[in-house]
Image 1: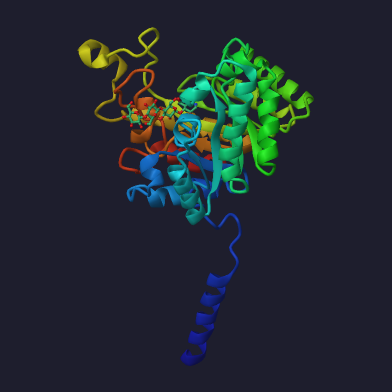
Image 2 (image 1 turned 90 degrees about the horizontal axis):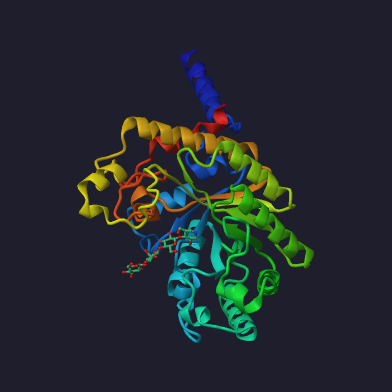
Length: 369
Ligand code: G3I
């Protein structure tokens, strides 16, 4: 009798373990898995990470399915002189993404900042068009077929909605905007082409961006998406402002991406931007209060802020194509140096030892509700 029962029990256990698991039973083990059906989850990567820094390599491979170069694909780095291109680090980035099975978002083709000095010095329209054409052909051309999406134009609109008086606008007039998108589409017809900017939730700026994008669309140029950078704060912008903006950009018939997400937990130093806080103990205590670690109440508030934001993204998952964090761990973040240098900020999902923060765990529960 015993001999017959045992094999039957064994078969039952085997059948149970081989049963195809339903979606509820498979617990996502990373943020990219959690949102796999909803939107891509990306991160910006710096030089150490592109070079495969062992302390973060497996984390980057596990958590993210799209990479953006934090700096090395900007024109002053990739194309510092008219006939000089630095493709070594970008090539390594593409190799890393390929190894990890990740996509690459290209950042960025036309931007007034971190601009090659020889382009910044151009004073006439024909020379600017020639230089930008050569730049786009060389950079977008090199990675043709390998880029998921490109920031074609970055930060061309001011807070009041007017066009930024950049060297591109000054030399080529506003026609540079549709022209850049047409040029990018000629060189790389398969990637999604984005306009990317910060403070995209402000009403005046949003209206200006929409006006500009409509003109690009009316010109017949290909534009596929709007990137909202997402350098946000604990109480600003509000969830309502973010939602209104996602809806407004999506109403243009474009994809929306959150392209550079981080949440600044430090006091906003109105009027002391660039302050040398190391010279004043009082100022340092006021502006850099968490040098010994993030207090529990602030950590909880940050977790709630991230959960609220991701609940909104999930609600609008039909409009959002990608959410990219601007860095992997808190120590990597540009926010430790801006707008005040040398502070200790906590804007990301992983701590300085690459451990998941409370904010990470809160995001992982967003779809439970
Ligand atoms: O690599 C050099 C190093 O050799 C040198 O010794 C050091 C001295 O300052 O500078 C290093 O370069 C810095 C670079 O980051 C790499 O760390 C630059 O000074 C610094 O200006 C640069 O900052 C970058 C910033 O863009 C420049 O505008 C940040 O890392 C990067 O996170 C930030 O990213 C931008 C997005 O591209 C566009 N949206 C806003 C976002 C935040 O500013």
